[in-house]
Image (cartoon, rainbow, N blue to C red; front, side, top):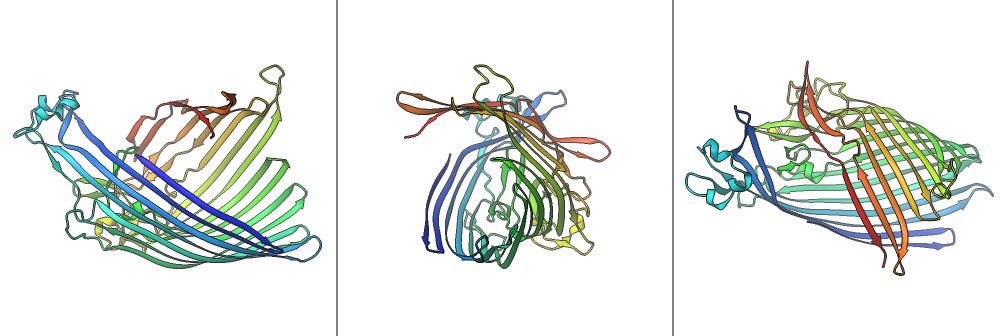
Length: 497
């Protein structure tokens, strides 16, 4: 069961040329996941599947996550001339995120079980009449040493200043800087009163993050825009906490790495924009990113258990182009169905080149070595594509909007080329995922009934029944994960009170 409580309060005030904006928010999300079962089978020499007597689990996990934030902005307008203005903005904000997570795991175990016993139907296998001496028994296998619970906290305090101005009649710009101090902690907690082998993760950092934008409106409906900024990326709590969890999509065990650090990014982009009609445009952009210590996922062996964990790669860079177009047009046909509809075509294409930068002297700090430094070349290959980054991304939307009857229908096509989902073990190739083409259909219709306004919704997902495909390739292809995602549909009916 998942719950989310969210509340916000904000205000905007104007005192002549002075503007004051303030905001505050609190949110709590919880997850209670009981009786999550994992049951593994093997194929016998006769081709018949049998249950492995030791490889099953029943887990119970709980998580509570709280976020409190607030901020205030002060802006002041100054007239430079009749057509040019300058705006000064200063502000401050605070953010605090706390989390408590806990997991208990149990397993039915047995040894020396006969083949007939192991080939029972799963509900028979775990039934009470199969539990006892010489059969199977229920034991707790919850990890000790802090592997099953953790407490985490992230506190960020920031202040910033910005100046926006019309530099010339057709040229505007903004420049600003953000100062940020943050502390992120993850503390493992042993549920059995023992001592955790991991020291608490404490990331304390201060950053000065400048940003600048320059816009040239060389025509009434066209502009060039250049932007440069420095940003940071923090590892997630789950990436830091040394707590195992099973990912149902990949069917692999994941575990965090408490030795991760922040990533720092330099971002540059140049964009051409043409707004030829309201809500209709053509844009083209070039972008470049330089990333210091990006977080990547790697396969990790601990004893006989294979896990997927995380590492800071030494560095990476990527660049690419992006094309985006959105166009409305009137119905090409007439008739009861076609009249009053406004048709939409929207398309986006992104081409990305990325590569890791790994030198002979670079080091990483893996979980398997308990934070002891190892050569980065043991885990990463210089020039390899950045993890999770496809070379080609494209999407297309086609549909209509009918304001008269209140209906909207859209066909969505999304494509992503192959991408790395995890770095292989040392000496092995990366795990590659093929997302392929996804086709969806979404329909909405508003109507009135019983004196109320209702909205009917229909969603059909993965109409092409695209498979999930993940493999390794070195001379020949070996499938790691391959299964049908399946098509799905949902119907909704909503109203407002």
